[in-house]
Image (cartoon, rainbow, N blue to C red; front, top):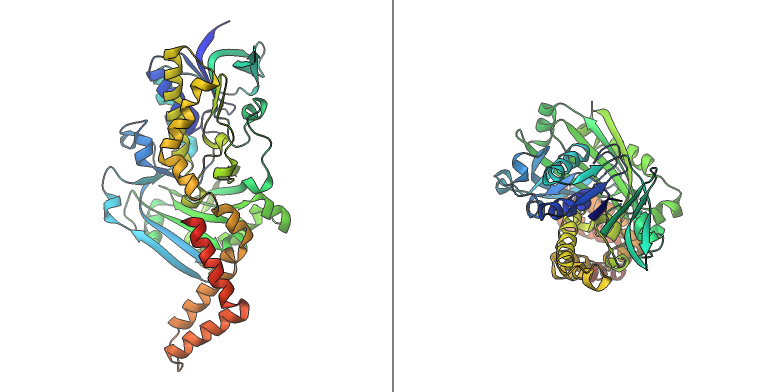
Length: 430
């Protein structure tokens, strides 16, 4: 029976990064993917950050199949028929090596996997991993659904996504609860390049991202997004599963309502549906992170709940977790010790990095907003009402308008309770 130094399960950013770095260091690595090809089943909103990616694939942005480099990032507070906008546009983001890019995973992940192949990784698609193999209490490989499908290795890297079967089989985490995952649906809408550039006021190769809160999720905990690709738009909605269950809603209806919103409709007008995707996104945050290692195995990426939803950071954290896992495995290989004690170096590296520090910083945020839905409903609506009042020129003085706004706010919620809410939000975010 052929044996590998490492078997990596899941050809997403985390799994590919780990396998690539291990193979570059001379290890014999097999990467198993259940999709028809790497990227076939991978979903994210579509923003990739350069700096963390370059730590693994230096200069990738010169040859990788990227869509647009982002020069403007917007945040919209949506009401039923209006929007209050915030944002940042910077010419520095239009200069190489750029800050971040929009990508389509089917193309980008396939390119990443090719880099791994060229480094010596054996990539095996269309293969489902069903269980881990144990010997003397230690994980020594995986069992696939193929005939004679046992694969043995010194270490297993579980990069099989949020519903990680391997992490569950290894006893590292139970089934996720509905308030620890979000359901996200996304459409890729084809639109001519020139039309995109005209509607979003960008030049060729430049892009815009829009994150939307409020009416976009019907007041539930979650967000919506609209990103510009080269010749398409990525638009989607993600909401906590627990909120969807409680309110009897589904994300497909929310997405259709979003596309019909009077602010969004002109941006997607005339676009043709090219692709539809749905996915579960980890939203449990710091306190939901499972045990990350055991004898003969480490857990990376979404399978490890390493997502910072407030800053739409998932793929970059996944890549970095793959990098730190590879570093820990290389030391374990040097020591010929793949015990939990040896592989604990992986978690130590994560905790020394900004990955865990950022997740710890926002450890209370998801739970706070889950308990304070007014931030996703009432407050965006009030912001829009206040903006409409102050920007409407009539016979009412500005001071009168201010008192009207205060009166309207007090009718909907006592001011002291609003102050308490915002103080709580500050503490949860700070």
